[in-house]
Image (tube, rainbow, N blue to C red; front, side, top):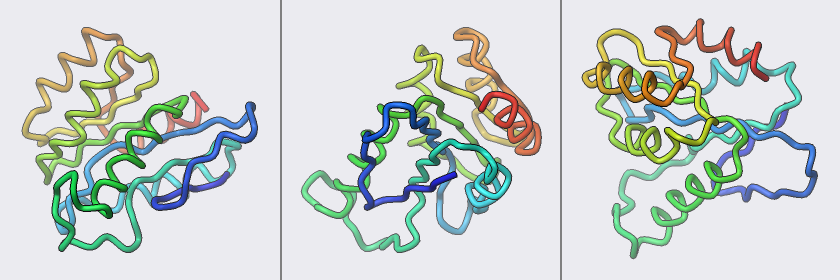
Length: 153
């Protein structure tokens, strides 16, 4: 398994390489570092994990198109989502996760998604309805998601 995080570029050099994007709650101070748990559990797979959580996030970056650091982060995520063969989406109950909701909408019809939305997420019903409508695999816990990811990958 290989892990790629921003700002490191995602390079499509081997056509057999398979990419898993970790979409989900990242809100600092509210979301647990669930990505690390997923990486640890999938270490024996041959997939490359695209993890948007930076080790060096700077909260002073202005969330505008004119801020090169912020713009670079968002474009890295959009590029990584587009090349991903699978997208795992996790909604942490302690967060609002507006970008994750956006990503769910962008890729709902793609056939790439697997969604985990535990009880307590503020828009769980909306997420469940979208998943049902577009036949997206849906689970309630991170452990269930990891089992399903292992079966899928």
